[in-house]
Image (cartoon, rainbow, N blue to C red; front, side, top):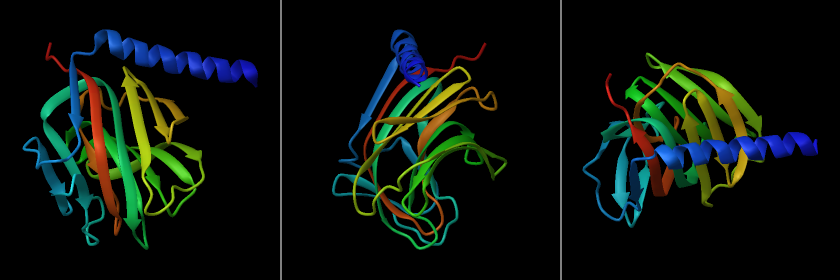
Length: 200
């Protein structure tokens, strides 16, 4: 068991180090002002009091993307606070989004004991990795982090590495945020280190 844990830590350090060497851009957004780079596709996204709040309860996959960059390798972190929801109470990070119907998403849900990585392809969601967790508490801030280098994708919830998966479906795209169904969720302190995609 100790050997396995050491290997997981070693791989985690390797991915972050690889991104740090190759990284070319940095984004830090505390949502203190309305961001022109953000484009809401689904849901009701409101910049208010230093947070970005998704408050629609009528859309199934609320989605907002930053349309100012197309990235390959990424290191994304955000704080989220699930406020309410009867069907779902989630917060999620989107990355390598080709458009509003094709992307990766890592999500946590205050109503479920799982932490999951999905692909969304032509609007259809497919689970590709999952971990069992203690559900995030409602009305408390939690942190999501995703690191994707090449086909290697890792995700953390509240500082714990929980997902470690390989997938080649999407190689580059936009970054953003996501909720589900009737989730009312607030986001804060969105940060990205990323390598811009260059068409060859």
